[in-house]
Amino acid sequence: MASLGSDAKGAALQGFLTRLLPLLAEAEDLVCVPAALGEVAGYLDAECTSAHPLSQLSRRARVSPEHLVRSFKRHFGLPPHAYLLNRRVQYAQRALRQGQTIAEAALASGFADQAHFQRVFKRLLASTPRQYRRASRE
View 1 (cartoon, rainbow, N blue to C red):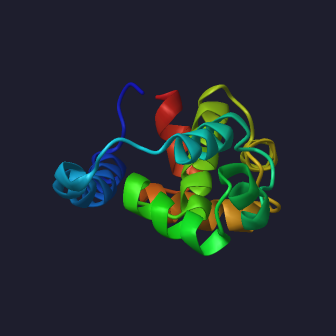
View 2: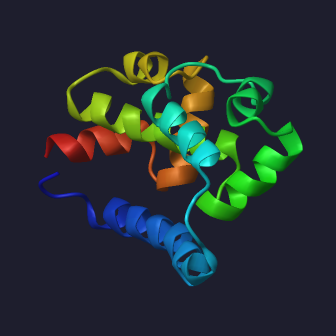
């Protein structure tokens, strides 16, 4: 990204730091991630464009859905669904930088519709997909 507009860049940075600082503050409390949780996180990383019901993920981790959500949040700072949405937005960012349209990026990254994609993207990055795409071309 060559030159983001100062407003978009500042908002994106502020959003990132707002999410990062609490995680860093809790980092001392984190111990090594249990293998089953690491497996689920790796699976979500590799398959972020597909749907993954909580029941499927909990079977993969061999724990109850409730335990998976609690443990996942304790170790990664987010419940599994929020973690997956973050990965999808990262996937979409790459797609937008590579020149895909917003609709193409939304579908390719696993969002059912463009409106949901835009809401999640803006919530996580403090920038709309259009602003991000425009800034990445500059």
